[in-house]
Each structure stands twice: as C-alpha cells, then as structure tokens.
Length: 489
Image 1: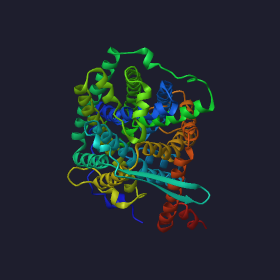
Image 2: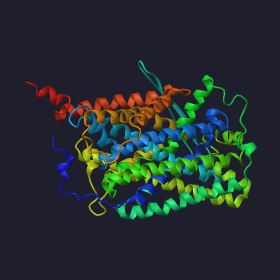
Image 3: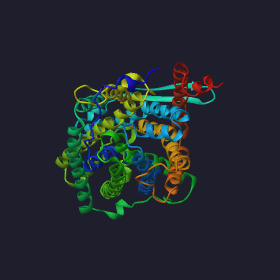
Image 4: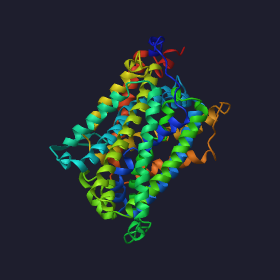
C-alpha cells in the first residue's frame, strides 16, 4: 500500500509563520474560550457551593503537570499532529505505536468535534440572553442501546433554535479558516485582545463591588472529607479540566511555529500560568456579586448559562449585560476558531503518514492548509451541536483521558527509558513527578464522579470500534501486527 505522503509529494508544504506571541495568544483564546463563562453552574452544582473553587485550583495544578509532559514531547518532536507523532515514536513507529497513534486519531474524530461543539453551544447559550426564545425546546430524546457485558449506552439530544445558531457558528469559523496561516496568526492576536478585555472588565467590576461574605458563603459541612466531598470534587475537576484544556493546542501546529523547540514549551507554560490566575480571580469576583445558589438554579436543564450577563446586570444594569454578552460571544467564537485550526492539522498528519484516511492528507493548492481535514471536522462538530452542554463536556473529557492523556503521560516516561540519548531541548521539571501526578489526577476524574460509568462506556465503545477498524486496515495493508507474522520464517 502506498502511503498518502507519497501521493502528495508535490503538494505545497506548510508555513512556519507563528512566533511566540501568536502561539501564546492562540493557546489562551483556546483555553479560555467560552468555558469559564458557561461552566460555573456545572462546577458549583457538582460540589454544592463556593468550595467548588477547589476544582479550579487543583485543576490548575494538574494542567501544569500535564503541560510539562506536552512541553518535553513538543520540543523534542515538533511537527503537525502533536500526540499522533509522540505516541507513534514512543511505542514504536512500525509496532504498537502505529496502533496507539491510530487510536488517538480515531478518538480525536469524536473528541475534537465535541470540543468545538461545546464552544458553539455556549455561544448560543449566551445569545439566549438577547433572544430567550433560543432556549425553546422543540424536541428532546433519550436513546438507549444495550451493550452485552457493558450495560446501557445512553445518548441524549435536544433541538432548539439555539441549535441552529450553534451550527451556523461552526460554518462561519470554517469559512474564516480558508486562508493562510500568517493571516490567521495576526487574527488570533486581535481575538486575544477581545478575550483579555472581556475578562479584565469582569475582574474590575467584581473587585470594585466585592462582597466577601457572599463570595465565601459556604454551606454547612462544605469541607467535610466525606465520600460525597470527593465525588463532588471529581465532578468539579472534570469541568475544570475542560476549562483548562487548550494549553496543548500549539503542539498540534509544530510545523507552523517559528523556533518550535523554544516556543512550544514557552507558549504552553506561559498560557497555563496566565489563564489559571485569570480564572481564579474572575470566578471569585463573580461569586462576590451573584449568589452561588442563583447561579446553580439558573444553569439547570441546559438553560440560563449566561452567568456573566447576570453579573453585569446586577452591577451596571441592562446596557452592561448586553455589552458583555456580545464580548463573551466573541470570546466563544475565538475559541471555536482556534480549536478548528489546531485540530484540523492532526488527521492531516496521520493521513499524510499513511495511518488514516487518504483524502485527509490533501492540502489546499492556493492557501496551503489541510482543507479536507478541516471540512470533515466541521461536519461532525455540527452534528454534535444537538447534544446538551453537560453531556458533551463529560463525554469529551472522559474519551480523551482514556485514549490519549493517560497513555501519553505514561509514554513520556517510557520514552526516557527507551531513548535516553534522544535530544530534548526542554526537559520536564522534577521528572518524573509531574507525569505521575497527571496520571493520578486523570484517574481520579474518571472514577470519582456520580454516574461515571456512562461516559466510560462511550470511551470503551469508541476504543473497541477503533481496534476493529485498525485491524481490518492492517490486515489489508499487511502492516503490524500482520506484517510481523507474515515476515517470520
């Protein structure tokens, strides 16, 4: 079987047009996006009070630990594809690494569109502040499929006018990405200014109207170390993990970053540090103005997500609420834009390497970007806009932890053992402690939540389906593990 990379040998290459500023800006707008503006009801509801701030604090610690994993791997192996390249090299390009890297791309075909869809759903949720009819439910269904030995697989979907708006946002981002990476780098800086301006205004408003008694209105037994406390912490950390994710986006664009050995680790760690500080200050400020019980109640049933709009309305009145709603919608769109840019490069890298569907390796003849991969990503993301926000976030985080993050954190240790002489422009601080802490944190999130089995079943089904598809492709192409068997004497 000829690899797609051979078929595209004459295709134009990618452009190294992003410096440290553009890379950090893209990471930050990807991390912030709409997440912290729409997930406050979810994270507060998980722990039942302001003690949910622990979820963001612990989540920041694990983001740094996992960020160090990405930083070491990204500096050592810069290139389009990120985890695809790392997993293949760690576990053997022609052996187990081929299977694991394929499974990563396979799960990304679900988790990346889920991530994009949450941004689109969040934008539509804030638009409902202007047009409440966007939350009108036309249809809502729960489908259950019984899987032998695994239990019931539940899928819920909902149709509202906001669903159509979310799909439209996805289409607009795709249209804007049809241009050169150098133009996108400049556009990312403009979007970054909008994101930082929005958060800065929120923090200023909160600090000048700060009510400490309300911000720290903990319910009775809030810090009692019971089973319920740790279950709630697991649920809060799952949401916080979603809010922090995006710090690795620059690793997917390694072929388009200037001086990647230096700029990838710097952009990763700088964006995590800045965003963690902004999150903590911003959320405490909001709690100091809007009672946490009101936030939890307003966010029930996939509605009332516009917490920041209510925050500004209480301080300055309707005009400020309308303005900040527009700014949050811009922030949400910036996140969708950044996510689609980064993730579209990953299937492209795998297809070019001959380990995924051939068509995804095509590069646009004029603008020189992987346009088929981008379009495929957009179509699946549009389909996921029919999910409820809470379900989309939970499925996204669990699928990615099971099939990517844990395997990669283990892999950075494996690679140190197997290839100690490999050049590493950036080496993980306090190795291997950050990798071990990242693994422990991910496992805690997986199994210390209410109804954790639901999303784990999703991940198991996707994993098994990916294994089956890989084995069929490998058998037809006489690749590992069948090539090893056939070549034996």
